[in-house]
Image (cartoon, rainbow, N blue to C red):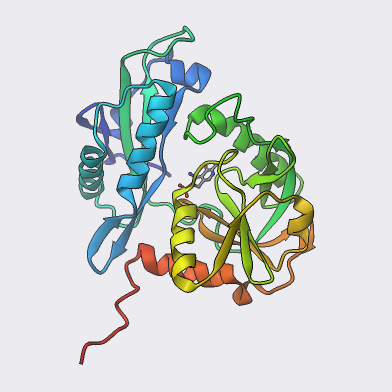
Length: 296
Ligand code: PMP
């Protein structure tokens, strides 16, 4: 699914076939979850293949690697150049890119100077699909920000995400919604969360969530569209009375939500601000916004 016989990836400055790449089993990232990564999308636009917000993603990768003391010896600009070459070498246009910076052989609990930098890419449909999602409030909380750097994208944090998603699926839901350590809604296992009530959008403030790049794009689009967004704490009870809700994330894009804990939202998705934002997001990533104006 992720690679074929011919897939090429970037590993420590070399272009190698995915099927030939290997990893030491004494790798600290594998044993202790100490690696940092990104999820990035490229789009096939009328202006050619474009990686959406590449600098923002690679700046966040640098932030994550600094927090975890994992060396990342390439600048964001270099990583962007490598990313375009990766797409080109694999003949990919609409793709998902996965940079991963992982440790070397190390069974101690100390970070080390050496690291490995992997970049790979594959075609990936919208992560949460195209149907409206039925969420449940997870019994798992997001990690306490005093236990780790929640704003860094660290592989180990995703054990929490895996637990939450699998709990939700086992109970017949599509996805989980996780609370923070104080019982406020934080985010999804792999996406930020917004809800709409009386024509105002609400989302959790930074502090207990990953500062999503899609979340930031929604702020930009909402400002342009005259939509108000309030960053404030709220509970599942508030969400149960919502008019609409959606997840945002690079892989998920803008994913409409139908219900939380079986409580359906008041408006049809097509009538929500989220639906408008989802259209605006698609146009922005595909650079379609200004193509409808004809010059006479
Ligand atoms: N929260 C979590 C936990 C995530 O894994 C993601 C996906 N990276 C997001 C939010 C959304 O982040 P972004 O919009 O930058 O992809």
